[in-house]
Length: 150
Image (cartoon, rainbow, N blue to C red):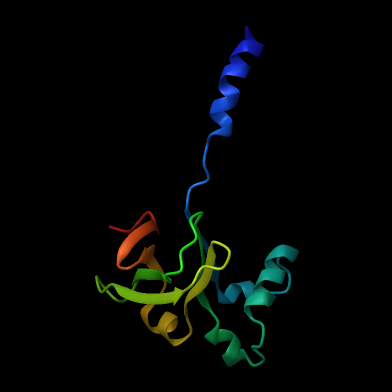
């Protein structure tokens, strides 16, 4: 009975298509992470984020939140994709801030980075809620949002 069930389910598994996808990876660099006694993996990531910062002031300018966004699509399109990052910061009230990046997909993939760091992070505080969407010709293709986004 089990082999028959497996044979019936196998064609269904192979028909699953890979969907277009928006992936968001977050990283929060804090000053307390500068200590050298952290885990090796954490220390390596902190050193990568602080690359190029020599003085303590330069290191403090890198403190903040970073977002790595990847947009993948199966259907190749010649038109550029626009990735929009909307976010709320702790001291900005209900004022929604926006950052945008445009570009063409290479081999069905578009990558970009957003950061809220330095003076903006020190003055307005951490990001409380965010939404990232991929658009083409002002039509939303996909979006991801944080739990706190309204």
